[in-house]
Image (cartoon, rainbow, N blue to C red; front, side, top):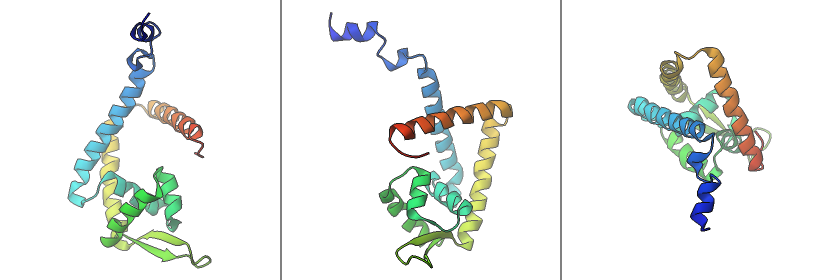
Length: 161
């Protein structure tokens, strides 16, 4: 028996997996939401990664670059590329920590706060238009399922959730 026959007989192809349809649906929905959000943010000269940073700084004013990278599940090098772009536009600022001079804290400027609020309205409208017809119970079940997946993947990678 050759390798191809063994693979076919034991369903090693991803599309033969019973949960493959869910995997593809989640991936496609995420990709389409990102593409749509990108289009809707164009006039603000923002991309979803920028918005993720701004929203986190809106919620957690004064966090460090390392804390922000952890929340966004990205490396510090990725942050090092994105933060200067936002800083140059006058949307964020870095301030020294009063207790530890080695630590820089990130905050939105007034301009950054206003732009973030405008972008959050766009994001919320997209969420409402795409999920508005779904019962809240269904939305919560989807969220719980995705949170289980996130926890499992973070655990597999040896990270905290």
